[in-house]
Length: 182
Image (tube, rainbow, N blue to C red):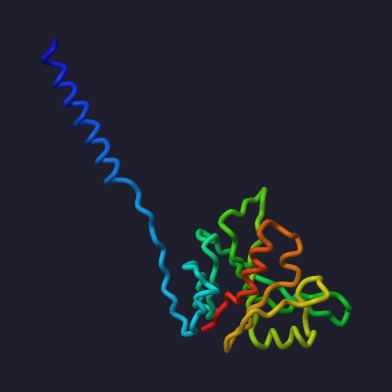
């Protein structure tokens, strides 16, 4: 009986050591996400201490997000503009892309503030400002947040009037001019 005790102790020690080493060597290592910034603008590093970038090569812009937005989602939709017909009724007359950046903590039962970015052609922007059509029921139009030689990027009027969780964070982010064109 006594001859089995040392063998059992050795098995327990080596088994524990193997378990420890196997667990230590196979633990998940943190993944560092690095995205290349290829636009030619110089970015003020104090404004954007983040590696989270939404880049849209179709429209020629990128949008920098804070690290709290890692894992965000993108919703592609369409905005619609209306003109007043001779009969006085509203008729759809213009459309364009609406790109919404959604916080990763957004939930149906507990929505967070989205960042909706309207994409208008330069001609659409000119016509909108000349009241040739309107977007939405608000007495004010969208707010320009950037432009390149083909498009104007704007926030819809009253996009944050629901005061969802995170609306202050989005407002602070927008004050840092996170949209850059190329």
